[in-house]
Length: 637
Image (cartoon, rainbow, N blue to C red):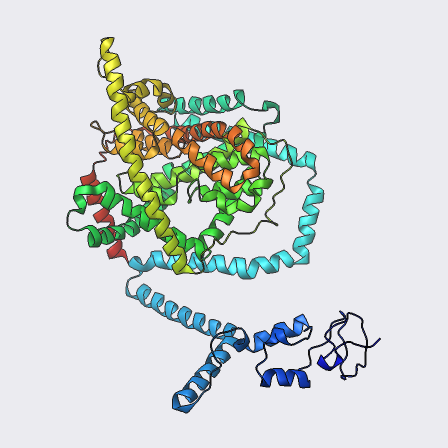
């Protein structure tokens, strides 16, 4: 068959014919190959005929290659001419840049090697100069190097080893389902017996502390009674979650080394956040201390969000969240999605944490969705954690409470809505969400911009909440006056309503009314107002009461957050809107009881010796302590 328009390189016809009169063969697809040496194309280039005007069906792959080789075709900028002295400079500069680009990996290794060598030299120098002052930097470096060696060198070789694969396969075959079941029962009995022996010895001279154990049993019993399907409760998750809480509580509240580690972490956190005050002084000075909430507390939220966004963009936060999620998955036996979400809730807020599993939310089972929503209600964000630390709350207790609330939320969620479906998520097929920022600067800018909106919302909420609280108190006072009931307020009602809960958490009886009021502020308004009221108490709490209150208030479980969760999850998973609206109040209850469960664990483990220490959370002492933290860290580093 003859080609039509053969003189223009066989431009039409889809039939494959070889040995065309133009001397070129067609491609396998039936389209002619692009003939750069044909007269037609020479004329097209010479006469500047537009490419689309040439009657030729160009091979797509060849055109893509030519466009990538000659960017001047798609770019409005002319090709470099390299004329004159500066032209030669430009020529050699482009050559050097192209050489570096082609050997990018080599130059990256050279740069990293140079920086590593410089850091090793610096570390050696400061350790020789004053080892006691530099030891924290040394041990931190050793820990980071150990993690890098394990994950980059040891783990890939170990996982690919045939001996490891054979051992893993043998363990799966050896540990049958029946053996695994009895092994779990044995571990559960061992934990219960061990916990009973420890508490029997530890609380022998202080039996009133066991009241908190009754509180834990009460909250778990409520979860069972209100459960959607009590017969399907996975007791492994419940027992493992309580065990993780108990062990972590021992480390934070009773082990001297653990207490020291969290004190140092809290001090380090507050030391970093002090630099937000420098920005506040630069922008708002003078007079920033006269409007502390707006000009000193809120900038801490801005700065913390800024730092978290940078850590998340470079992958450090995402990597850490995945590893913590894997530990939760291993210890509790929860699914991959709910484990990663629970880990993210320790550091991120109720709107940011679900983004780590956003692509998988439409695939979640109803029980998994319940667990994810409950985790959002039971924890606070890292930025707000930093903000509350500047309001007088000890950072170590906030950090410990947020960590302990993660397994507690999973326990209550799985009690209230047990799993009856097969999960569609697994750690093998889950990919990390890297966000939408182009680079670190873009991530930081987006975080700062979003934080400004959050700060405006918080300040507006505080103004409206405070005004509404005064309005409610005025109405209640008027109604109470008609019945000869003096000083009837929302705080008074909350104090009596939540008194039994505070009592069950192990709070001393004389402080139950005060902490009950704080729980009312947390539930009916939000935890921000509750922590603010905690710092304004006319009668300061004991150290034990302050710690229990910190643990109990550390969560977004309030009615205002219901709207936030509904809007957030409905946008991320519009197909699950029916399930979301059906679960949201149940998840709110799960988050609230998770906070109470964590506070009860703290009340169970805090010894009698710490109950009598009175701690005043006024702003002056807090500012003084923050300056002490700044001075100590300045001397240390």
